[in-house]
Picture 1 (cartoon, one colour):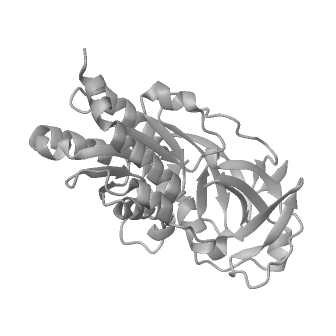
Picture 2: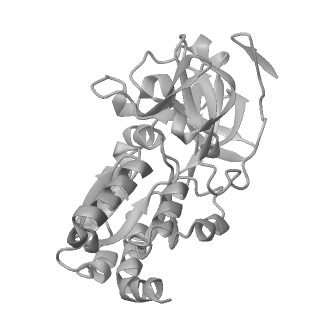
Length: 327
């Protein structure tokens, strides 16, 4: 145990093997940490493997300033990212690094470490307590949400944004895959995409655009559900254009599990093909997909894999509609 800011910080305190969130609970476990001042930040526990003292770092030539080096952690080599630098705050000094911690995360099919000044504790919240970041703030580009914990505002980091900025992400569909999947959608088809990460929304939209599909974007499950219900009430022809829904799992206000459950409970929406799209590839249980009624799960983010799953959804749509409408 290590002591930080008057609070005990457990090190190597967990390994996430399977989702602890139960269907319908719509809850979030948040690891709260600091970056050198009083502001508290948070990251979804599902994205975290463990927290350790900063190990020995080996410098990477010509790396961006946020990449402080690579480290060997029990035989696994990983990139160590200075989170302060990545969000535009002053980068850590050598003295600060010596006293720092590394949050080892797994998302987007990779393992990496985030260098932070201190770690506080894990808190359990309802997603209803988690709000989108205020618009017009300088911090909104690296946050997905904010939450109030013990009267303290915690800013939840957009991990996809940080990773894309520091490391970069391939967004083009391979030529051979594009040849196979392009032109499968009807000319007026649309896809509804729900994700609290701006980077993730744009990645999915760009992939769908390459396939000739228009994407309608929502920032959380409730926004997506409200849109679907409004179309069902006021514009059934617009609802009929929706070829499928792609939803992140971890979102403020309403997560992807709850969104899928609500879609399946609504007679007007239950025939929609639902794809859950999450960065939590290492901890996801296929049973959860089936239990909430989703059709497919895909780990973020690989454009070829997403394109193949979308193609499958388009090919199966007529059969899916027929099965959902049968008694």
